[in-house]
Image (cartoon, rainbow, N blue to C red; front, side, top):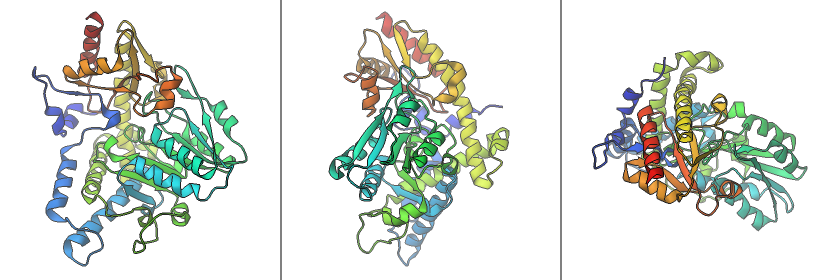
Length: 423
């Protein structure tokens, strides 16, 4: 049994939009942000209708807001299998939370301490650390990757670790090549060196079941708008770390986690949307997750349903990704980077980067966009990876799948690329 793609697509109003020629838009821009189901849209608008107030008040709408935020924290804790909902920090986006985390951790370090980063990461998991290193006299060590598969060089990682390593920060999945990093192994290596491990899970959250306890990381960041939700970021951290690290906050704000990390008034309407996103995913787990239930026997209730949902979506996406790569490889002059072996799809998420000989990536993206096929070009803030592949100047074309994409859309992309080659 596979997922009913048409039934799921029907829940996304944006998928009904059409080009001038009457064909529906094709959303392959998903790594930059997915579309949202109607339930999420309704939750955002319902917040304004029924509970629009600041937190902490002694009146009905404020109390509803407080209850909603508490419920969403619990739901997000289940999504990540976090030990406590008090470990869920909500913020505007991953980048802002990453800067806050880096500034906080840097205050606990000494000059000469080392931070290990990778050349595979989005700049939101690179530049915050580089900046605090420059301010505090810290040393940054960069881990390389294998080309052209874009898999992390684990020997390079081991060589970068030392008795001065204090922080290791890596992506779970590359936002460019889609390559998955062995985060459990990295966590063990970081902890053996006496370092904290920070995971950027922005690109893995839409595609694989996440479990912070299984990974063994110390912090994990993700963004709801990458997994069918609104624009809100999430930081998970071990409670003792969130409680003890120095933070910048106003004096009246609570000094307990997670509130001590949440500066200013929250975007309550998008938090309400995040709650609806988790509920929507849980419904998928109820309907399609039975075959995956044995894989998550250690979990109960919503946590089990959410993991089963993500496993069901991942199974469909892996099959479609194999079809996508095969289609792309049939286009003359087109080169796909990252893992392409159909037997090794477990090493990637369905995000694919490519070049087309003789064609500027921006021009390819523009011409596809004119046909209602939405892709990205450039470096997508994965600067070191693009430079390492020799495409730092113009970048590449990026095609990213979600579970609401279909085989006919992949074929439409292939046809459009053949047309570009011929003209």
